[in-house]
Length: 147
Image 1 (cartoon, one colour):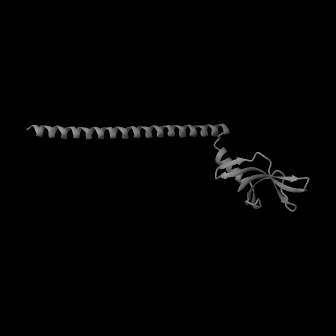
Image 2 (image 1 turned 90 degrees about the vertical axis):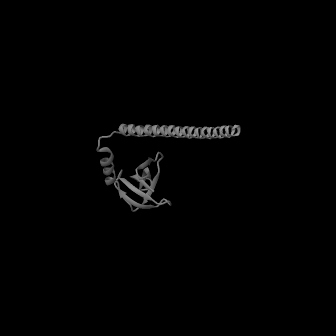
Image 3 (image 1 turned 60 degrees about the vertical axis):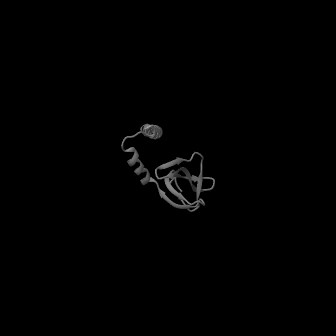
């Protein structure tokens, strides 16, 4: 699993550690890690204090890959922030998309209801046609019986 982390020196253990800040849940979905979670790097590993890194962890918790996050952060800035969108703008877009989703759901429900109503009317018309046919046949048999 991929994490955004920050390098810090653990003075007590005299070694560097990574504080996990966020975890990737899907391609464009990250979740902030609210509690403090750390991974020790070992005595021989040194890093710049407060350096942001991307770290891929195995299920066992072992570090599989570690890279500086500068290019990743610049890509985020270029992709999401260079258009001048503020977090409020993004929130409004999310709200607008949710409103569209709800509207489409209501329209879909209305179409389904109308479809059921049309089907019921069609069945009523078919039953009425059958009833008329039976009455005609009965009337024809009666008129033929009279003659």
